[in-house]
Image (cartoon, rainbow, N blue to C red; front, side):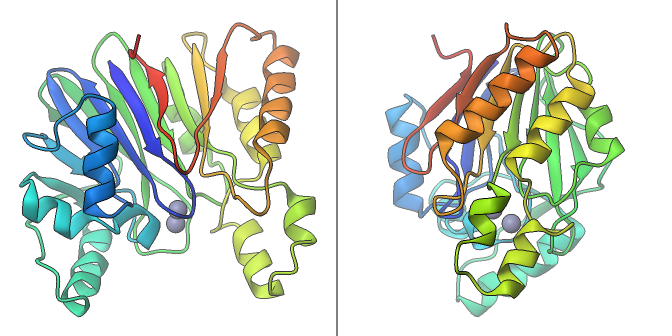
Amino acid sequence: MKAVVLGSGSGGNATYVEAGGVRLLIDAGFACRTLEQRLAAVGASPDGLDGILVTHEHTDHMKGLANFVKRHPTAVFVTEGTAAVCEHLMRRAKETVPDFAVFQPRVPFALGDLTITPIPISHDVAEPVGYTLADGAEKLGYFTDLGIVTAEILAAFAGCTDLILESNHDPETLRRSGRPWSLITRISGESGHLSNEQACQAVAAACPPELRSVTLAHLSEECNDPELACRLMTATLQHIGRGDVTLRCAAQNASCPVCGCC
Ligand SMILES: [Zn+2]
Ligand SMILES: [Zn+2]
C-alpha cells in the first residue's frame, strides 16, 4: 500500500492511495489544477483513477471534485446524504454533476482487492464518514473532521497499520483566537473538530498492535502548532509503550508520505 496526504487543513484536503491493484483519492478539496500538480509531484497520473472517496460536502473536501472528474473521469463514492448536498452545491455553482456511486455507511465494499469500510463520523454536515482501507496485508484508517471519537471509530482502528487522524486545534489557542464565540463552540463541539488532546486520547484508547504510523491531519493554521501537536502525540505513544510508532504531521501546502513511499 502506498498512501500520501497531498495536503490537509481547512484550505483543502486530499490523499492519494495505491493499494489492492487500484488507485484512488480520498477527498478532492483542492482546485483541479492543484490536484493535478500535487499528484504529478508524487509521480501519480490524474488519469485512470479507480475512484474518489468523499468524506463530506465541506468545500475543503470537494472544492475541485466536479472539475477534476470532468477532466479525469472516475467514480465518485459518497453517502446518499453527501451526494444530495454535493449535487445541490454543484448545480448552484453551474458545475457538471458527476454520477455518484452511493454506498451505505458501515457496509464494506470492494474496489479491486481493496476493502473499503465507511464509518459514520460526528460532523455538522449531512452524512459524513471516515474510512478504513484494507488490502489484506495493510490497513489504513482515515478520520478527519469529527467532533468526537465514537466507540465505532475506536473499533475501526483495530488492525490499522497506518492511521491518518485529525489533530485540529489546541483548545486554549482556539479559546483565545478572537474568533466569534459561535465559531469556537462549533469547532470544539461534538460536531466540529478533534483537539490535539482528543486525538491523543483516541490513540491511547485503541492503539492496535499492528500500528506502525500515525499521521496528524487537518491542523488549524491559526489555532494549532504542529510542534505542539507532535509533542503531545509523541508523549502519548511513549506513555502507552508505543514509542516505535512513526509520527508524521500532514501540512496544508506540502505532501506528506504516509506509507509505501520509499
Ligand atoms: Zn475539513
Ligand atoms: Zn468539514
